[in-house]
Length: 389
Image (cartoon, rainbow, N blue to C red; front, side):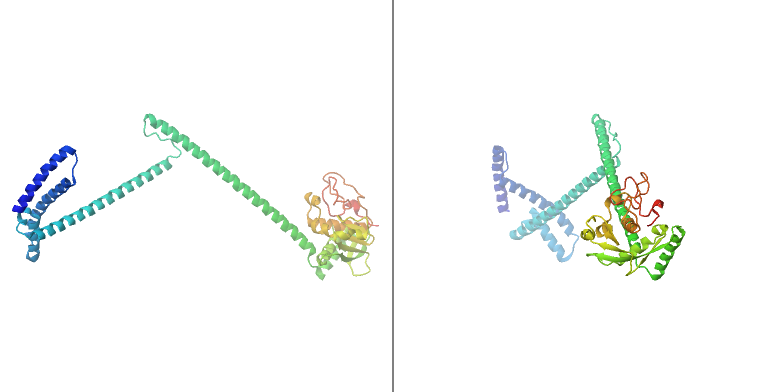
């Protein structure tokens, strides 16, 4: 008691000095802060000691004894009867435990507050966004302040601009899709045309069975007999000059074209492929060899020299671009060039009949590879050309 009273007297003395210092400096010293904390701890200890003492009265046994010891240590009035070190340990334990609990509670409170604030802010942002989206095409006039009307006007203009941009983007997208569809359609049409042309070429070059050959010959003879021109049967051979590959497809095409009822059978001529004793030979030749048949033969076109009907390989493979652009295709060109050059073997000459007028079918013997003169492409002999020498 004496030591504690002395300490309290000293504390009060120091506290007096501290008051003087505070009045002089206007700020608390570390010693003042510690004494303040100590005083607060003592007041809390007395309160806790009394409360704990009442609670311990309802507990029995060894726990009750320990409980009362802690309560006595916390109460300054009863702590004097206990060992000073023991009292110090108990108080220190209680104080630090209390501080730990306080820190934990503060941390939990801060966490809850921050989380709640963040959630509210997020909800506010979502609500604002939702409202903005919901009002994209309308002017907001719920607040009738001096600035509210201006804000509504601005919102309307912004919405109009956004709508215009969206419409422009949609229009551009639609045009782009239309162009793609158009391009795709053009590609599809081109592919279809090529497939159709190839189908016709394949049909002309296809292998001919004996039965089909007989049917073709019978039809040609029937047409020739009905022509009133008299029937003349011609034998022809097939040959190649240079690197022209297999001649099977070429020979099948020649046979089908020459005996087609739209062609020379209308002039009374029929044709049979033979290996010897031929009236003329139809030659598929590389372009560079055309002059070897006659100096007058051009490497650009087909030619007929004596008993040789020479088909230019370049023309056979590619035709003439201007002729195809005028409405023809490669299958029709091959038909035209065979009939034209064989027409020379029957006694016809180039351009013996001229174009009858714009839009009219070109005469077969007109040099269609070089000029059409306003006529349309034509691969069959006209009525005025149905004669032979």
